Length: 228
Ligand SMILES: [Zn+2]
Image 1: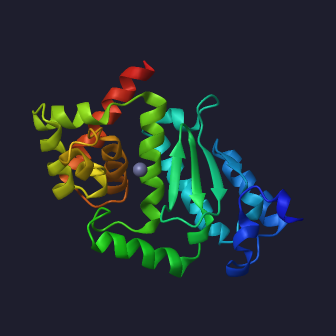
Image 2: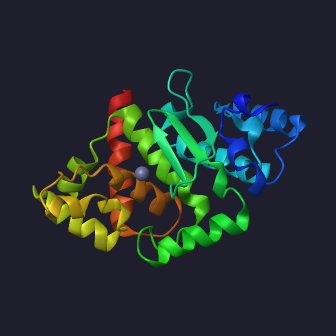
């Protein structure tokens, strides 16, 4: 395969990555995902351990028990892969979650995640294996059209965005209040879009964060109503 045929960007970083998985491993992974209603995209060029991806697929299945649309025929999650020299472990657009393959090496991703967690960016007590829950928060938000800010405001009995941002920064994670600094300087409005993501990470990651638990329970109620 030549460089031009690399979809994921693997060939740009080939020299620092492990070898890509075998065709058999790819088929095994694809089947594993399909059985659970999830599609894979660009995983032929995965260089990590397929057991990690199977674990991610199992976690999508866990969340789907509360939010069934994420694995139904029409909306189901597409798990994608790219290689990008950035600090982002993963990203979500609509129902597609794209993992950054650069990190998918146990030691690299563990250290990178723990560093950010120790600085308060991610929910204390979570690990890189919970990143998928963060991204699933975005998927649920996109599919069911959840308004995170409104849910947080209702839970806190406030109409003030700044109050919500400060609260989630202290009680969930700095990332939950992402862009808040720009808001303080008046350059941007806090839209609360990372609240659902970080609350999913805290709740499904088993951290017993009280605010995250109430938040996710509210999301469940809201999404049940959408479905009925
Ligand atoms: Zn996010």
